[in-house]
Amino acid sequence: MQSQKDRMLAGEMYDPSDPEIQADQAACHAWLARFNSSLGDGAQRWRVLLQERLGAVGASAVIRPPFHCDYGYNIFLGEGVFLNFNCTVLDVVPVRIGDRTQVGPGVQILSADHPRSAQERSMGLEFGRPVLIGRDAWIGAGALILPGVVIGDGAIVGAGCVVTRDVPAGATVVGNPGRVRPA
Image (cartoon, rainbow, N blue to C red):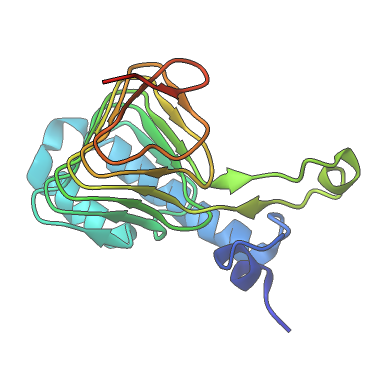
């Protein structure tokens, strides 16, 4: 029988109150307290801390605290990725950010999702859909990337944009909901 954590990692419905999942979140919260208190320590210290918790940290990748996530181990950063202050990544399944992508302050990247049926939601179950952000993308301040979205290489997401569907490579998307801006 699959554990609730295995179900979570597979993107299936799972119970987030499961003790193993709760223990992972508690460990992440303890790590976040250390990471977020390192604001004055600089990129070298941040890198060491990131490598302790994240799934992958490419060369020169930086996250500026404060930062928030669910687990950490489902976050994969390419080379030269930059996340500015106060980003949130809900990583119940993989969130992958490609090389040299820049993420502005206050961005939220969400892989956690919930059933659309009120009856199913009342059972407390949830699931995840992976988020993939390609290489050389730029995500403006305060943008919101919803579960299951793929943002192509070189794409631009405008500040405050709510990205509800995939963004083609090289496209610029703005607004709420995000719409591709004509070239």
